[in-house]
Image (cartoon, rainbow, N blue to C red):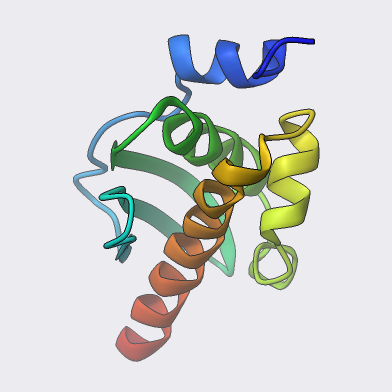
Length: 123
C-alpha cells in the first residue's frame, strides 16, 4: 500500500487556492514548532459566507495537501458550516493520512478557526 493516497498526492502536486488573498477580511496563522509547519489562511467573508479563500503553507506534502483540501471544503460555505470543519473531515476527504501526519490536518482546522476568530474581532 502506498504511504499517501492519490488525493493527497493530487492536492500536493496541484494545490487549490494557493497564494495570498489581497482583499481578505479574515486571516489565520498557525504553526507546529515540533515539525516546523506553518499555515496561513486568508478568507473573504461576505454575508456570513466564505466567498473566497487562499492559503500559504510552509511544510511537508501532507501539510500542503491538508491546506488545499480544507480550502476546497469551506469555499462558498456559510460560516455555520465552516465552524464545524474538523481535522477528521479533512483527513477523510484526503482518503486518509499516515498517523504521523495527522497533525497536518489539525493545523488546517486550527488555521481556519484562527481566521474565523480574526473575522469576529473585526465585526
